[in-house]
Length: 233
Image (tube, rainbow, N blue to C red; front, side, top):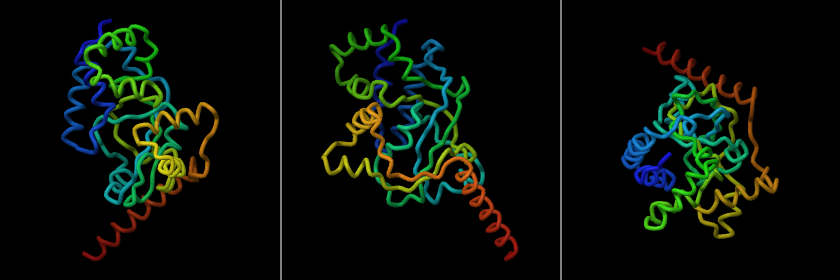
C-alpha cells in the first residue's frame, strides 16, 4: 500500500484543525474524503464504540433532543471513553451543558480510523520518508499520533445516543492554565495522566438511565411548550 502525498497533507490539515471556520472545515472534509478513496477498507472500519464530547448550546436543543438528529458533517470521535469524558477542551461560557455521545459506527459511517494507521509499520515508514522534505505537512500527524484514539465519522448527533451529561467547567483545563500548558499540548498531557491512572475525577456526570431521564424530561418540556403555543393561536 502506497500512501500518497495528498493523503498525508489532508490528514495533517484535519488534525491541525480549522479554528471553528465552517468554510475551512468543509474544505478539509472534501480533501480527506478524496484522499481516503483509495485507502484499504481495514483503515475505514471501527468495531469499537466511539465517543464524542459536544458542548450543547440553546440553539442545539431542538435538533438534538426533540428531532433526535443534528448533522454536522464529518467529525472526530474517540474510542477512548476516559479521554472523551475528562478532556473537555476550551471553556464554553455560553453552553447549556456538555454531552458525551456514544455511537457504534457502521462500516459506511467510518471515513478514517486513525488508530489503525499507527498499527501499520508501512504507514510510519512512508510518513517518515515524506516528512524529510515536507515536515510542515506532518507536524499535526506526529503531534497527535494515536493518543486521541481518533476516528473520523460521518454521523449525526442523536439525543438517544447521549451517554452522559455534565457541566462546562474543567479542573484539568484549570490546571493546564495555571501551568501554562498550551491547548495543542493538552491531549498528550492528558493521555499521560490516563496511562498512569491519574484521572481528574472532580467532574460530575449524569450517566446511563439518569441521563436518559434528563433527556426525556427535556423532550416532554418541548411537547408541553408546543402545545401551549398551539393553544394560544
